[in-house]
Amino acid sequence: MKFKYIILLFLLVGLVFPACEAQFNENVTIRALDVLNRPIPNVSILITYQVSQSRGYTTISPKLTNSNGIFSTILHNIEEDEGAVDCDITISATYDGKTETETIVAGSHPVIIDLKLDVHYLTVRVVDHKGKSLQGAKVVINDFEKITDEVGRAIFRVGEGSVNVIVNYQGGERSEYVDVSQDTEYEFSYFTSNLKLTVKDDQENPLEAIVSFAGEQYETEAGSVTLENIGTSFPVITIIYEGREKTPEIDLSKLEDYTIIFDTHAPTIESVSVDYKDGLLKFILIINDKGKYASGISPEGITLEYSLGAEWKKAKVYYKSFSTYIAEISDVPVGSVVVYKLSIADKEGMTATKEGSVSVLEEQDGINISDDGNGNLGGEDDENKGGFNWITLIGGLIILGILGYLVWTRFIKKQQEV
Image (tube, rainbow, N blue to C red; front, side):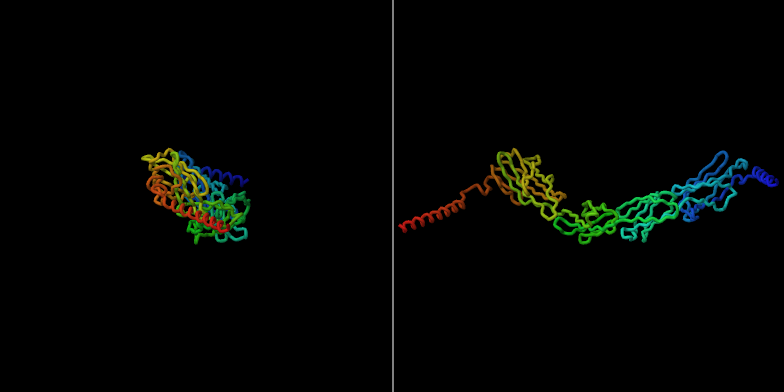
């Protein structure tokens, strides 16, 4: 019976004398712990309390616990009427989707308020297919990211439940779900490969190039470089040489040694000759792209621009046979001077050019254009036209003399037999 009176007395005292004073300034220290009472850093803390009866309640913006799992602050209440003061303070701690909430009373709480969360350690270890630790792998769990150390390990604090673990190593990414209900260790095994790259020009000369892969750059030595422990069969590799880039298709499950070619030599214009008949002027172009690994002539890269006066036009160009292309210009009158610009490009953009002019004096076939790009069709400068051809005459007389000698000796021999 006396016990009931004691309880009633405490209740009456609580009504007459509030647990906290008006206009209190409350020191609050919160410590976030995991299930084994280990401090957790970077826990988000929210605190809600009364400012005054007229202004109501406020929630401080989220704050994070320090490396010891602690966050401290002072709460200021400005209510002057003790009867209107609300002494309750609500604290929430959130980490990796787990939240713990507790309500304390101003002026009547522990110096350190411990909030325990369902959080455990998850240790991820990354190894290759031979069990060798892989340092430098990026491990991502929810909003947390870490890099594996020299023993291939990354340690996280995670909320209890199924956790999605993403591991990225040397261009290869894997994702697996891990069930966590206590401190857990999980091993990721990568099948890794080495990749040898050899960079050459079209004539088999080694090139000093830059190889870009997984955010890193490597330089070739004597035209070669080897990338070790690649974690994917299909790495995305970029090779850079003098501002030019190539991204070869690589499949390490089939081949680990690749050669990349940069065509660095322009094609050659072996010869240019012209035919002219019935107003149609034809340029016969003999073009080669030499080199064992030459990229070859690009048909779209052959252009012949010409002018019969002030206006420049493009001739029609087409392939005829091996190394031979034809450029045609129609409606060219006798007496014209055709100025031309010839440009040749291979499939990697290396170019060769030739410029010159052709004087069309009469119909003629097969006239070679000299190295300076100029030529004549007919007229006084044509070697096949002009004065008497003495070489032809002398050659004919020699042949007639030989035939006459043979006939004469045969006739004498028959006379002797008779």
